[in-house]
Image (tube, rainbow, N blue to C red; front, side, top):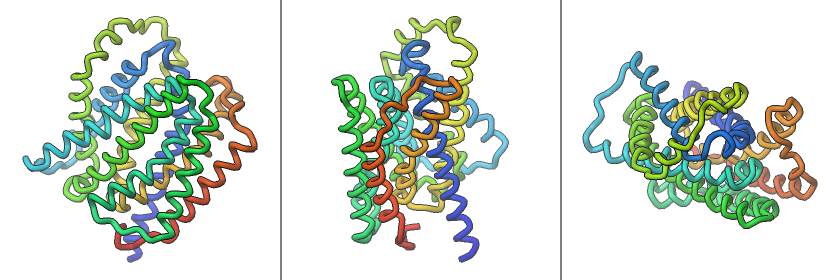
Length: 308
């Protein structure tokens, strides 16, 4: 029991770090698009760069033969967890704002809960359902409050689709985590995700229009951060966390993203790493966010031990 509890705490720490990195990326990635890279090209940099890192690391690890019956699940995880997820997120972030991106991701737990309930038979007590609903209401209210243009609202819808796509991935990848090492799982998921991206026709004209020579060094640092930390490290930590906690519990940590987005918005604006997005932070916004945090508490305490 003590070893199991320690693993659960390590998994929780990994998922907390994932969402802290995501909070930073919402602010930094916004400054790269669309001036230097289009969302589609940025996605290509992110996926293929991380794929190279995953294969390099996996070549030094011990792996299991992949069963033919699991290949299709790997393909679907690559489609929803990588290709569709990233396309919707980056195009949504390009049209919306870092604040909205962090908040809309908070809707993810209710999507995961429904999918887990239907597909995995995961049981949730009434208090957890209340917390998920309350947190989602707060996140949606904050999203609607911050959407003042048609373009921003369209971006918010794309971000919502991104959240749903990621929820499907969290549920589907759980069974693969029970059979294969985390590094092997995420490497193959990224492999199939990159193949799906190559089938996306708008990628090629967007690449042809990209001028890499105009990208300054500070922007390259942001791109590298997105590839190494936001993609390679976060996806690896997520599959490690999913090995010891349920998809619903894992998705609850996404609720914490807004507080990280706020913190990094102030920090990066102060040191000149990003534009100033802090004007969207005010007392009504903070008040609605508190509703989200109440939802976090109700959803994560207590946790049904049978589902961990």
